[in-house]
Image (cartoon, rainbow, N blue to C red; front, side):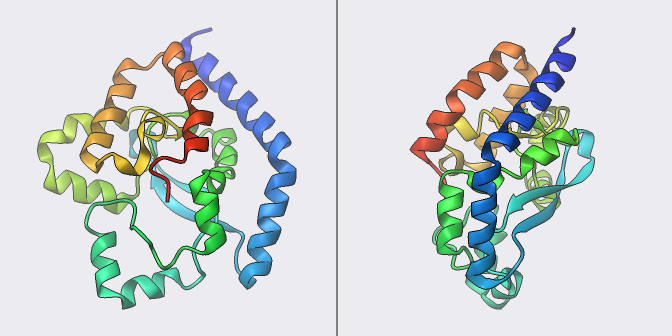
Length: 208
């Protein structure tokens, strides 16, 4: 078996195991989100995957239902959201429970379904939004080679960025870090990232 075949097998095993073991927790999380405001439990958004192929990513909803209305009605908040930073400090749209879910990356558990569908891998670069990539490409044309490198592999639930500080890493540093992963990709590197992931999650460094 080659690397890609082994990686796909690992993805399936990890996703099935994760969904099976975490199913009771997922049910509790879904129930708590639902009773909090009666809104959607799962939030979906279009992201960019391998070779720029679009797919719908799944997460537990961590924001209020009218998050978009709040964003567009608050000029300062909107400017922060479009400034290039992927995290807004003290974002008023995030619920108290949603903040807890984000802190320990529990909102990302539904992405195991994306892994099973073959749209994502357990280990890989972050799945970027279309507007993030367009803005970064227009402002940093010299980094095009790094973007193309990270877009040559499937995005992941965890990766070099996630185990190296998440929000404490600048957007530019993240792009180059994830490009490095795609250039150095190997089974050993994947295993190293997998081993570091639980520690990174428990430390919750850079989470919001």
